[in-house]
Image (cartoon, rainbow, N blue to C red):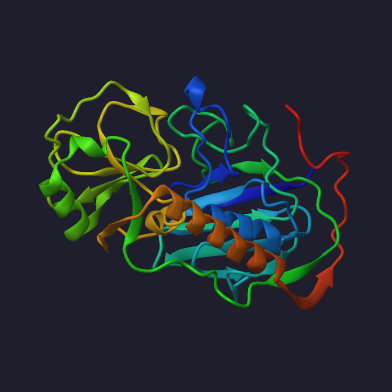
Length: 329
């Protein structure tokens, strides 16, 4: 089995696939990437299935070497990176050979970056996924952040062309769309006026679990404590401080604060990539509108994934000795 060796790791680097589905009723968070379209694109660029595991990192990548030839791609945003000192571009795949060093620098005008390796990261399945949930120590490599000296097993990868995304992924612009509720009636007209008309700022207090927003105080006239009920990615909780908290990939599955609204799924990756200190505004839409927007985005992403262009350079990557590209433990 081939191995990805981490010589240096940036902050918040973890193994992530598309997450654990269907386990929220058991208190198991779905986790998964903060920006799913970027991870899916990275995997497709190196010839993987979109659901394969890659690496997610915040702000800065790290330094990597391999013991067998692989293809790699980095997505999420523009990223400065080199192979043996030679600059290479994000949003396209490249070869990395034994003895070469990949260095991934800072993410530009975004927060989260993604590294996919041909064959995928082949850590053991935990509850049906390889994704890391840091707060509960599930999945990935021992359920933790990655660090210098870690060695990650890779699945088998065969012959495939190098690919490039010639047109950037289309991202929505303007206010972040929200669907009111499920506790929209805990907030009166004046609270809603503030929420929809005043800007908020992405606070420094943010991680894979949640993003806090600084700005005007939002008061719930019906009280800031409720009987705990379910949450989803994008739920906007309002605790007694009046500072909205947007739940993200590694959210808890239930919560006892009223949720004024839910960020539409189509806009959640964009919010995750909004830089600390940037201003955000919200606009209310209906659930049907949110579903239509997500379907439209899915079609755009599918077209981009199917329209990747060959770079005109291929290299045969020999199969690893394992009989399966995935472990089943």
